[in-house]
Image (cartoon, rainbow, N blue to C red; front, side, top):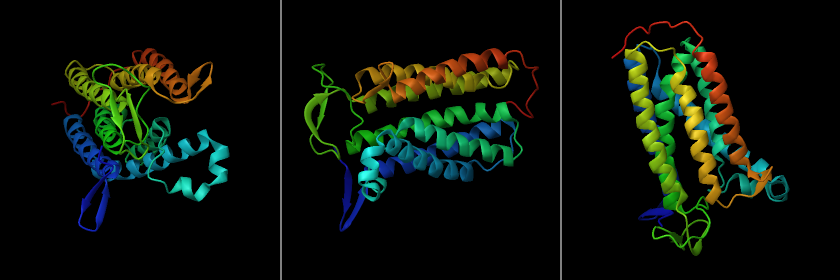
Length: 257
């Protein structure tokens, strides 16, 4: 793997590079969704702020997963270049986006629908950063033909393991495309706003729960990892919100392209 790009004396972490690319792509997709929905807001500043909040949330959640290790070496763990939890990143970025959408006075459910394809594409690109850096997000040892080792990774392993960041990249790219098309169909057929977001909670929760089966994260809740417990909650919330959303009166967007 390639944890760093070397440009003369300059070292560029590939993880950070891919996170930056993920934010840029997500901003353009969110902007395009705003345009087709007729929503007036600055997608680029929103994604920038939410991206920073997501990175902070991912780091904080990871640190709180092992409080004893954190208090033993707080400064070293805070400033290390690896150790980011998906659910913490989701909470940080989601919380920031809710605040920004409220401040911009955007329709709540339509705003959430607009955010979901951008979030999925951004997550997929970010996982390539995990893959390139070999930061420990890989899975259990495997004899499958596509098993890979990460001898030069930030968290190295010479065993052939499940390349789970690649699994997530392909799954989330597919989900992003599906969510974009579902959004277009919902606009055209004047479906209730919020359905796309419900689909995001449901399908990303299922996907992450299944990915965790071959991951090496410790188990805590009823034999599940923290990410699996969060994924199960995401699925249940998605189902509950679906039944709430379908009962809402439909309000037509300003434009639908």
